[in-house]
Amino acid sequence: QVQLVESGGGLVQPGGSLRLSCLASGRIASINAMGWYRQAPGKQREFVAIITSGGSTTYADSVKGRFTISRDNAKNTVYLQMNSLKPEDTAVYYCHAVIRETLMNPFIRFWGQGTQVTVSS
Image 1: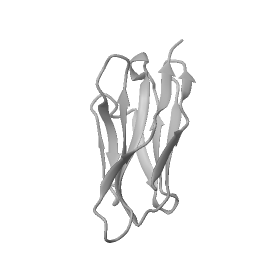
Image 2 (image 1 turned 45 degrees about the vertical axis):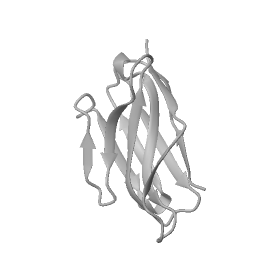
Image 3 (image 1 turned 30 degrees about the vertical axis):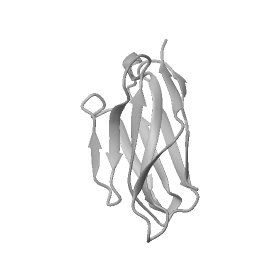
């Protein structure tokens, strides 16, 4: 059973920083892409950033230059460093990972339960 567990959310003032972490655990043969989405109240879930197994990254325009995604393959963990936070970054942040549980299984996208990030003075 694969589990993704996020941590690092919280309340921060505008202009501040937070670092989110997401650990993948369980039966894992290999991990392809890992990344983050977010969902603000009353809005649809939106793409934030993604990183491939080779380290290539893609960001939403709204976070480019402020957020940095990285991963530690040895720890099955993906990170999201968020700087210069704005009130509009307030949302529940969800990590995802495309994982193959055994070498015989196809890759499947798994989701974490989310961590709240609130940017407010």
